[in-house]
Length: 468
RNA sequence: GGUGACGUAGCCAAGUGGUAAGGCAGGGGCCUGCAAAGCCCUCAUUCGGCGGUUCGACUCCGCCCGUCACCUCCA
Image (tube, rainbow, N blue to C red; front, side, top):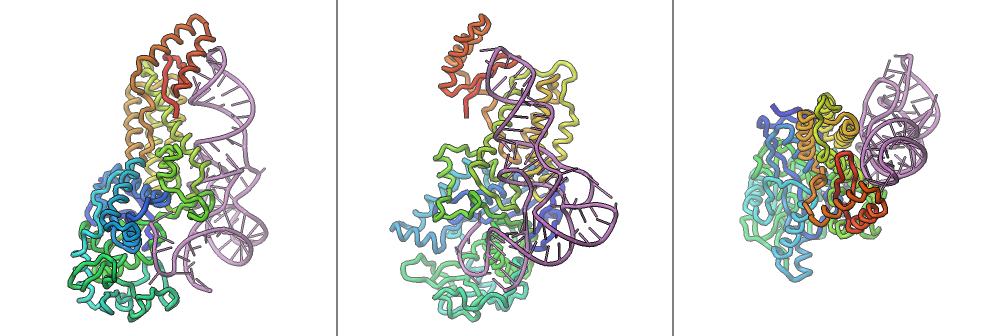
């Protein structure tokens, strides 16, 4: 029996207990990147939210099938490829590969499927045909449009009142022939110099929203459980997806819609003109730790705006270090022979609070607070009567599960690879200390510090690790 | 103009009717030959402001101030 988890559903505007269509199996679609450049850290805030979501569901006992699309055909990819004079494929593959490198750097787990829009053209065409058959679509000058007037539920996700949408205010020059200015394009008639597919709909290419409907339903079924994205996608993208999908199938498309709030940088919206626009690569080139970036980006619950600051990044790095330090102490401290000072109840408390936080609309701040309380209890025990082998085993399991969910437990904190030279210097220093030759001992410590090796003299001997 | 969100210590942030989690930074102490790591103490009589409801409000209601988002490019 999977553990219960609640979410604030954008569609119902209520907190609901997740109840998958298939018991214990969550099918989720997560809007992915348009592969025309390097995603910025705001994009990764959302992708990291989705990563923690899938990891939490798995830890809670659900089977997860996640789909993330790669948008490789749209105005931006077309323009980018044309500007460089390369094929669309050649252009997008580069960013496609970069995206996965970034995911690896941030420790994001792979989804089950990463469909590319250009590989789903037939399914998109079939979807448009279904819509046409049901009277939801019409052709105008070679393009096919969705007829909003035919879908009464339009606006139910975003709460938008179509009467308020100012007619004619923002209409593309090439879309003025629509029956209604609010209708959106499903299939764009081919244009000079743009990629085009010959299909029963005529030569052209898919509109922006179509791929997500076709690929999500194709891989997850016509009705599925969870659909996520950034808040900016609520309207029009997700609203249009619902119209297209439900218009075609006559069935409910998605039960739970989850939207991640935006990220700000130093209190301001991230913008190239403000000079605060960062890709992951920008930050890694500054030598920042990807784990700290991950920690920062997941430490604020997803529905809260997140203010990304370098101050915050330092705090995140310190948080990671605290976890690593405790792990290292744990690894170097022999198990207690007596009763030990860490009681099983501390583990019970941690597990209950950690899970309760996550179960409450993925409250990662609460889960992290529980972790820090645990770390304090562990350190207190390490300073006191130690930790027994039995409790230690449970603790290891709890920390492993924490890492499985949050992915922020640093590796290598405990066991550094053996290095004969360093070990030799440490042995020399130990001897010097024993002889109370502190000048020599400190000299060796300084020498090692210059090589990035930090020493700690503990009651159980001198241990070392590499400085961050 | 329409719709919606938010405002908690120097910074990040939880809490959402019962008397302010957690982290970072800061101050003091313990431990150490000295460090490092860790621990302990300290750090919001108070939750944007003003009213109201209540035995009791950061939590509910009203008004005001401020910040932000979406309204067919956008995670």
